[in-house]
Length: 254
Length: 204
Image 1 (spheres, each protein chain N blue to C red):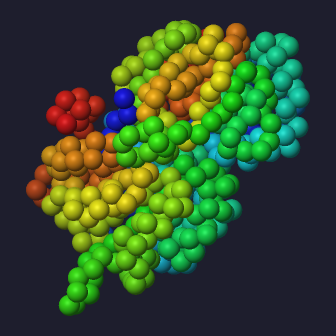
Image 2: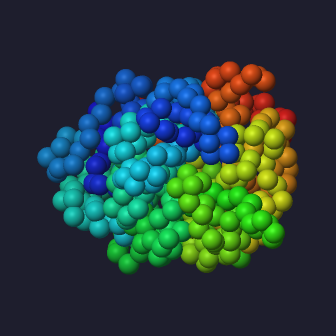
């Protein structure tokens, strides 16, 4: 039986791993390769690594880093950050990533999704949607790019409809408002996205305890539950400790 | 010695990294000469069918690979699209497959998958072994392996079924025919289960 996927999501900033709150206040949490080695030992279901500098600095992905990470990963590896062209995506898959995450480049040009899918297989094309509530009088859910700095004016649900018609391999739904808060996932918005989108969905932003994961697995069954803080911090003072629940802990409790 | 085929498609590094950890010798072959003395071959594959087949056609390796597998009967393990390439053709592309095993690669039918997500079939799923227990010795079958695909092999002879997996319906997740073995999932990304499978293959 196909199981839900429990996925550590790591952010790279200035070659180190960081964890943010609301896409700000980045705190250094360690070395990326070291973290991958620990997650290998813990047999994590998958791993997402996002370079949060690449698009902001308008540069190409750091292929050396991707190669080192992909070689080390004994679990499926999704890389995102600065992927702008079909050639970037081909190179990343060739370096050993199973999935390529796209955000600003495809929000600007949805045609790129098909072009990249034709080259690397649509199952490997992941779109990360960073969204937050915006608007003073009428609250709406808007997509943001460039590490939450650039508003797009595009409504989240409108864009999910477009993605559903484009044969995307996976959506990673990332709530900027909940990032790093550890107060639980944005279930209401996730439900609406689940209704619109037929493909694999991964929810990110807000997980603070295993019960938060249990809640979305109960709700959605086959779902990707991604988390940053939960897997890099321990205790109420948020001491840095890479951790991941055991197979038993997850699936006996869930 | 294991020979990992490098034809520009597939996760060579992840496979070689595991054999490094297991201290099992291997070479990465990208020329016909490097394939001449191969004793065991791994044919990986990531990407779309035509992209992989085109790369293999252009690599100059197809002829010697076919000789090694079909005439010399060297054991070979295909992974993901590596399995698809062994079939006659695929709905995903226009190019012909290698045709080493009777079968056609088809897309999952969205209409019979009752749950969301529908496609791709992605994540950790269990496998049921029909044949070739030797390849799965020590594997935790409940935990299973990592899959990421929208296409699977069908229309094959019953005796070529090695494993099945359930997604919407039961589909064939592993095939075999004497020296030919191939799996739809990714052992190189399936932690200890995958390592065991790759180790078992080195002894077949």
